Length: 434
Ligand code: URA
Image (tube, rainbow, N blue to C red):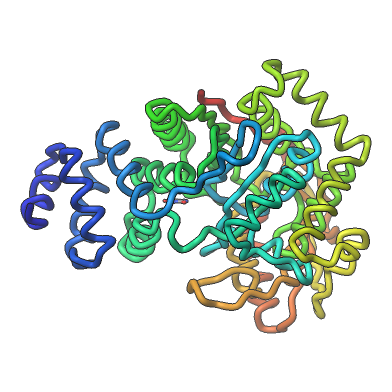
């Protein structure tokens, strides 16, 4: 096979065969296809798309490019969860306590944040001592002992996706549904789970800005799961304003702890409880959605979800005194108020602007090896549909550098849209695809 021939084939909108896709992925991972050739092929895929069959072939080829985790020694149905990314998304952290307390094995490989979106690994690392680089044996052992473990993706998990994703990131080819679907599903399939619940975000803070695109992405991923015999459910959620009130690593961990204690913001809890309910259904704990919601509420109300989270933090080396006294996690040297310049109702809090503000403060990475500052972030005091009077506080900015706080301030002001008319709270759960 010759790569120029395959690039031309895709440029002419013809389907690539299973063997051709396998050959491309193997040779690109091995460094035998140049980045400039792969970039051209990705752009042809971006414009002409991939058929469902091609998408499945790409997923499998990327899954098989590295090791596939064997979780078979862990009893029970192992359910994984993945979010397609967002701002203020601390859902996985809350799920650790809930799913673990309900005796369901939750073995989760997570990623770091990139760009304006946050990552679970970075958030958990704001707890002093917390280790995210577990060995495979430790990872499996922790799930066997306490039901839950979260670790950084090993470098050998779907390495083809790692290489391709980095190339897509710099060639303007990230936001294609087939490429995103195969990227996410290859990693989930390599992580050895039995079933998957996907949180597919849509809105200004997500990769998929349009609902139709998010639904199409969900259908593609659910279809891949079906073909490969892994039950997969996609929950399409609203990411037009940040989820919850806290954005930034330590601030988000503090909010996740509040949620586990029963004081989480309503929008965050709606997403957490919906995702957790479908995880219970995939794990065959119940087949009734209302029963699932009651079970989840009961472990929050009786404190076992919170206690499970403490056990999880201690097991991974974290200092649980920071969980018990979560205010001690928040130690930025500057706290700046952002005040409303007019009265009215909040119509929009643009998640992309808030994510960018967090990035400017040092809470995220522009390059993969940037060091992040876990203490910075934004706390939203007002969210969509809230009323506000001139001079009231819209948000607090937590930072450690005056210039960065000033730059972040502009983003936060831009994020807010205040109008005269009353507006309803946004709908958080947009669709369920199964
Ligand atoms: N998240 C992924 O893992 N891959 C993508 O392509 C986009 C979001």
